[in-house]
Length: 235
Ligand SMILES: [Zn+2]
Ligand SMILES: [Zn+2]
Image 1 (cartoon, rainbow, N blue to C red):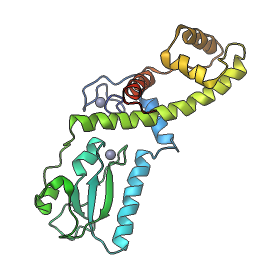
Image 2: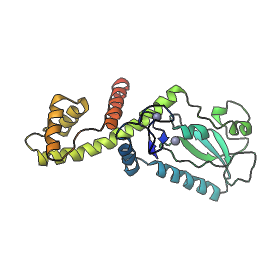
Image 3: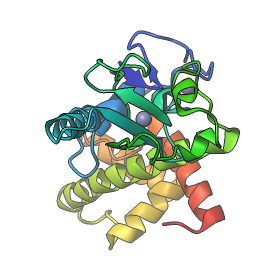
Image 4: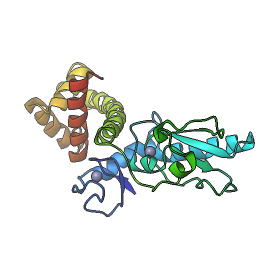
């Protein structure tokens, strides 16, 4: 399983096209998925799934078997299908669906105890909570929510790439002390802007066996992130 860099949805490792957004799988996609999985800074999809299981167990242990999975806005297609519903965590209350099992890239749902007649599902807008929880399991994200989710993951990936770049820069200073930019921010600037100087430096580095440039997939993510960061002012 890998993540499509255009929509950040899960696809098969040998897929050539993304079944969600239809785009051709970019070169370097697998490496970005690996980066996400190894990250200690942000929870990996597996960590998110484990946390969900843990929260469910804790609530059950405390005696609460009806759980509300509240939506958090920007989320993956999996969370979109399962958000804003009440689940029967032990499967005993047949009025509600049982807890779904899926792995995702985001903290798209928050899990809490559901108190019948008291807790409100705000997304239900007054509809019956039982029928609302049993509505078709579809990705009901708005266009805006989908874009928000892409930017959410982009920001994470950019931070991870930044950490990697810091290591690259330190190595570059050792291997090519004469050519390395004076500061990391200088290095980052030329790399982000993909300047002529950077491509020369990159060639020089690769002659020593060092790869300092972004892969095709990384470049797409970085460009998209920087464009969004410039427009919205987030850093
Ligand atoms: Zn896609
Ligand atoms: Zn999710």
